[in-house]
Each structure stands twice: as structure tokens, then as C-alpha cells.
Image (cartoon, helix red, strand yellow):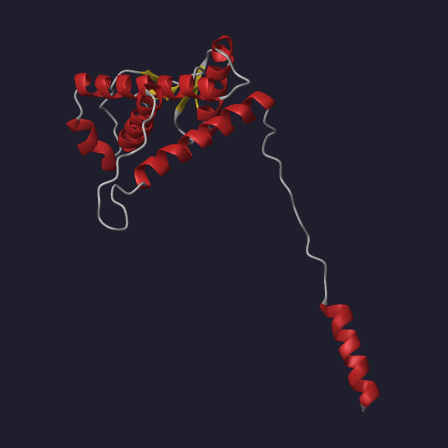
Length: 195
């Protein structure tokens, strides 16, 4: 009986154990410049989150004076807040194809076609007038420019001369993050609807 039990346990262990199959799909390989830009951008985003989470009082309830930050830093925090504030509207503009992601990391406007708007977006489309739409896009583009410049400033390996390449990196990242059906500009300048 002991031998049969031992044999059964051995068989179970032998046939019951399999090696897990690991599948690795490489979506894309990032260039060194893309990695530098992403690292600086992520660091910047973390800093902004820390600013938002700093408490204004100490454990005894006394008001603490926040540490001094540079004007550039404050401008960048404001830019990230602007991007966050307008994110939902920009996403809807993209769905309506009123804007597209250009190859320089900014938004490009297109005519505000209000015909053929999906039912779930009709109220939104009716609410927006051209002047408000243009103001939002301009604010978002100014904020994106501020972030692009700050990424250049906080990375010691990047200079103002790298700005054209950095803009292309942001354009590529925005193009990759665009959803199917949104307008994107290819590196050669042509526009298409992302499949």
C-alpha cells in the first residue's frame, strides 16, 4: 500500500507539474532620447503630485510655509494642472475630430463639424462655441509647450538645440497614445485617422 501511495504521489507530481509558458511581446523599442524625455516627464509628473499632496499644517496644527520654488517650476505645475483640467474636453474634441495630435506634440484644430455627431456627444458639441473651443486648445498647447521646455531644462543631457527632436518625441508619444478613430499626423506631415 505504501508503494502504491508513493507511486501515485510521484505520478501526480510528475504529470501534475508543468512549466508555465511565458510570452513576451515587445510593442516597440524606445530610443535613448525617448527614454530621457519619458524619464524627465515622469519625474516632473511625480513632483506635481507631491506638490498637490503636501500638507499645509504641521502635526500641531500650525501653518507651514511651503518651500520656495522657481518661477519655471511654478509655471510647469500650472501647465500640468491645465492639461489635467482640460483632459476630458480634449478627449472629446479628439473623438469629434475637431483636433488631432500633430507630429510636434501639440494639438491642431480642424473645422468644428457639428453634423453627424454621435448621440452621446450632441449636448457637448452644441454647448461649445468656436471662441471657447479655440481658447481651450490654445491653453492646452501653451501648457504642452511649457512641459516640453521644462523637460528640456531638467534633463542635463538635453539642450534648447534638442527641442525639435524633443517635439518629435512628444508627437510620437501622443500619436501612439491616440485612440482608434482620432486624427494623427505622421512624421512626414500627412494626416490620417488612427486605425
